[in-house]
Image (tube, rainbow, N blue to C red; front, side):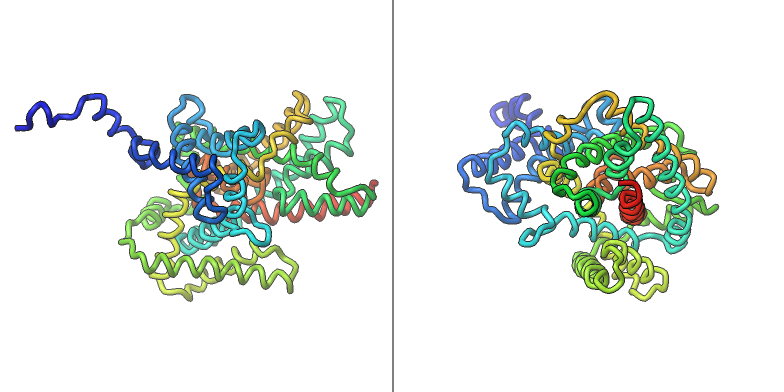
Length: 440
């Protein structure tokens, strides 16, 4: 029997039992203090080590808080906090320059940066496709284009109607509010659009970027909240949800059982999954120079073809899938901290925000999501999953896909989300450019 002296006080026992994410609270506080002091005194390495340290410390905390706060936890709280608390901190200058520099080196996709965002997306796309049941993949890719097209048309019409009701010109509503929302994000959508608008209208591209970013950011916020609400609806009405499966095939239980079958994790196979993801991404980047199709789309098609013809050994697919599970379960909230720091400019949003502006953006996103919900049901897809995938067309590109799918806890839909974002966004950019040339 232990003596009274060896029994820790109740307060210390409770403190040791508390956790922040997967870390005991005392350990988290020590690690966070080390990282914070290094950032404050400019000793934080401006590389992947410093970047991971900052986004992990904040991501673990904000993700955990988002899962605990009432109401917020039901509408995608972890995603909302991980994205927008860092953005607010940047706005009020609470981030040290060394922390921002380290995050930029890690997350940004510019030359000289580590481009962790695209590595994350590549691992999720390749791992989820190779780990998907072949039948589910084929049916999903074929059917998703109908709700995507219907959602795009319906959201444009609704946005124009609401904009007209609030006194906005059709021209401004379409080109500077609706198109940025469904254009595929900032790097893949707004930047090419700004160059096209600049060429046609003869004004600096930078002036168009500042006009379009607020709509894209607000649209992404509403899409994230919508995904969280859809997740909640799926929990209350399980018949509407496929729990991450997009298409009703008649043997969902068997397919879901196969999908969720626990296989022993072999770490060398996860290494094979990493080189597969990197190689598929590189293939897309090289091939896009020859066929003028975005590399991300070519990466998805390659993974889908490889899965369809079953050319890879099952163990390689298993390794890619386990790597996807590891990355999505541990680095999603931290990555979103980096996205909030770099890609959510709160100052740009506040410049144009008004009740009427918000109403137009909400009408576009909600119409997109609701169209996917009902058309998906008609196409024998699960309404919740169809709505979430269609809603990704109104997110911030790959950034938005991560936020929307994490908010709904359906990261396995990443391949379909990328198709929705990339093909939907590219189609929107082409359409907007042609119409701008016609009507300017």
